[in-house]
Length: 183
Image (cartoon, rainbow, N blue to C red; front, side, top):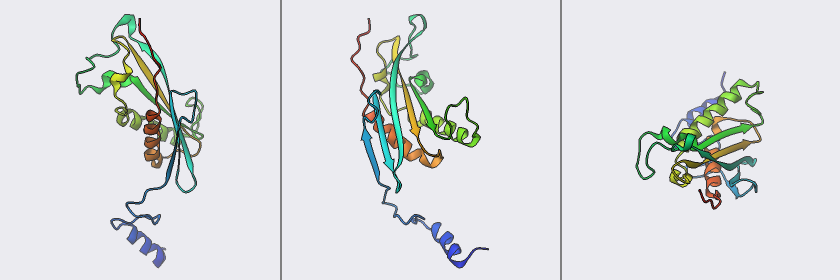
């Protein structure tokens, strides 16, 4: 049975503009961002957030991909707008890993694996426009394939979606492509 204080707490928590942690709607948790936290990556960022400085690190590495037999890697002209977003879906790939999931092949924690897959799906679907994809094309048959690794040293949960998104955006702000000449 609930005490009077617990009942009051639940009633108050359903009111608009009330947060159970005591913050107001306009108050955000402090976030610290460090760009370039992984020197070997083409772009990276580490964020610390929350009262206990939870950490998320994102690194972006790239490799070139060439269409088979010199065929175009994309199915429509760069300057055209297309509703078919699947045409260039493979240019950015997201990989979320935490201490709970480890390697996808050896994990035994199904809930964490399901959460990881949901976060990967969200990032693939909604963070695909984080960069102008025309910058990823070197020519008609060659493009960059970006591998975006999201590392969480602690537990994995869907509540981390907002800080993960912030860390991904910060890593893309730090992204630098090398000078390349395609012959």
